[in-house]
Image (tube, rainbow, N blue to C red; front, side):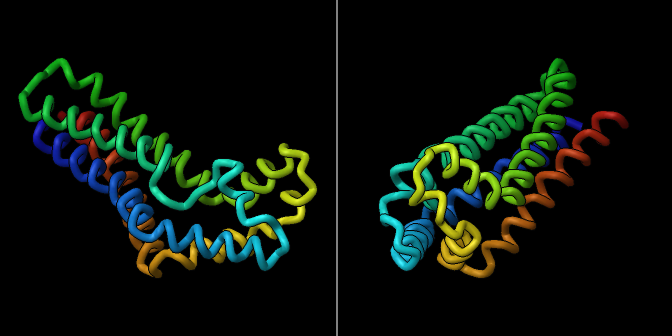
Length: 172
């Protein structure tokens, strides 16, 4: 059981660091495209940076998945060491893995609404008139087409791993 859980945790850890690696490699191009789109819309090109919006792997775009991956690697190591007291901890980790990935998927699906709301809270008329769907579409085009398949695979691996891990814990 411990080996299976450790394998699931290591696979999920790899899945979590895959997207920041892609963002690190291609995020600059995505940001340049987004800034060009802002200029096309007649909005200051610094608006995204001023509001903490970026497409690279800096800030929480790296430390959040990196932190999750680190936790999963530590848990895998402890599982491989054979600590039986980890069973309830593994339950919590599998549940949080599933719930955390659900939050990430929801965030991705509601990105347009979230960005619009964030801009609206600033009470800046220039931000309020940004065509957010167009902005995000241009930013997304800065990433290779296979990025979206990687994202789907990552989500599938994490969701399936959390469910499989829970099943293994139930059956053990």
